[in-house]
Image (cartoon, rainbow, N blue to C red; front, side, top):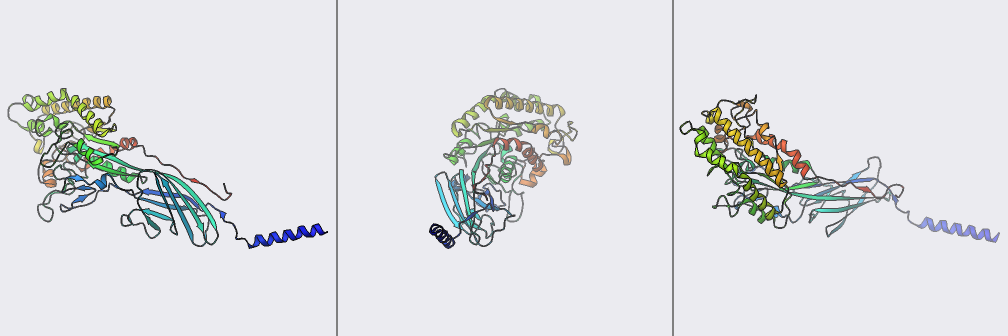
Length: 470
């Protein structure tokens, strides 16, 4: 009897002590994930001739800003994802823990979203807490512990994110610079007294195929950003352009060396390049050949010095690409090089047949058109051999893409006419380059290959604690 009474007393005492304790937190999975995105870096914008810096490029100094090429940090938005089936009462406190690359950051806030960077960059609303930039690319572990003050529910979620900033370089000739398609057309009166170019001395714009590809790479993947450098210059050759300075009055070095000065210790992820066609002309590049073919006077085009010179260059052009490959490897240590094919069949109609000349090209003979096409086809074959030898990626099919959209194909033409060049940029320099539609079509055919080469990847998150405590 005495023993039973003692056991009963101990039981009552235990119940009293238990009743005085605060209830323990219960687990929940009301946070089911973390949505995240990197803030874009390459975003083409409207500008005027009075605008000095555009997308990191200093137009007055003819160079990219170091902060753009080598940023001090990266913008990231992190947002908690809720389970809509679970109702959580009261205020929720969020403890965010960020760890990776020698960086450790912890904060507790009542907001379910973190915005790393300047809040003026993006309208994130009042539900985001502004924090400092992430200092580096690479892997970060993001852990969120959400606690409800009313119900004492706790939800813990952890996710590994991989920040990627792709450094993409466009280099080469007018095809890469965007010749024929300035950022804004030439206006004879008003504030803008000439065509708007990102770099007026190079006829470099955001409307060329390479720039369009870079912008699409930026837009299509929220988990990466793109740093795009375009150093291409209209009229560039393998020698005076890529390897050595082309315009001593404003360029200090060739394009490859210029890129090296910009990037310092950064790794170039991909080089997008078009080069070689201007090597066929002694001074003015490919335009010399076209002008010789257009000239109706003697000698015949087949006997001109321009064609003889071009055929001689064609025989040994692989050695020019050898120098370019050695320079890219030795200076930039980049093996991921993409070479673009040129649309060499530029006098075909919507049926793919040769057309009579028109406008600027009225006097071209069919035989001379075929000579130029044959030169172009041999050039394409040489490029394919070079890409196979050096492991470059060749964007094939561009010439066939333009087959039914030649210069004289009327409203089906994908080339800039002399008259359109005058309207767009106040001179003839843009003639026989792809027009806006042409550049867009080239970007479309090349984009899937280029995107695949960059190997986009995502790392899924895991729920660390659920209702059953697992």
